[in-house]
Length: 168
Image 1: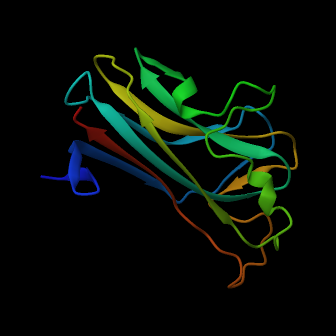
Image 2: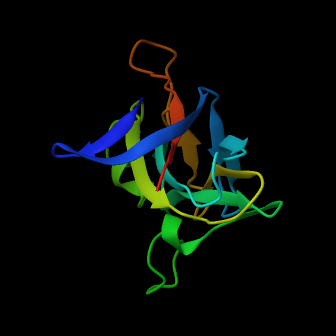
């Protein structure tokens, strides 16, 4: 049995694991953005908790981010347990601001990771996916750098989403 431990105490049993990865190259220059790393599944138990770990690789020309969305009751939505604070009027992302890498050489990417525990307590099919967006046309590149010279320094990468269903 796979389980999570805190020190030497068993904290939760892992009931299921779902995984998605994507090495496609994506770009957005607006706040609508796009979605990827989508998983939908039927959980073992309605009362389960879910450990969500998402990693995105990319680069931004200006303010950009991404948010983990939940699928429940046949609808994709952004829910408070999976995103930033409502104390400001900006984008409530799950990963922070990707623009910190704009000063890095234009042929580099950076990795952004979000880890959350969610307990939706809903029946039927649920799921998680990532929506990415940019503030403006300065853009966000996913799984690739801003610039390219076709050489060794122009890297390509893979983004991932892993969801563990945990017994309560």
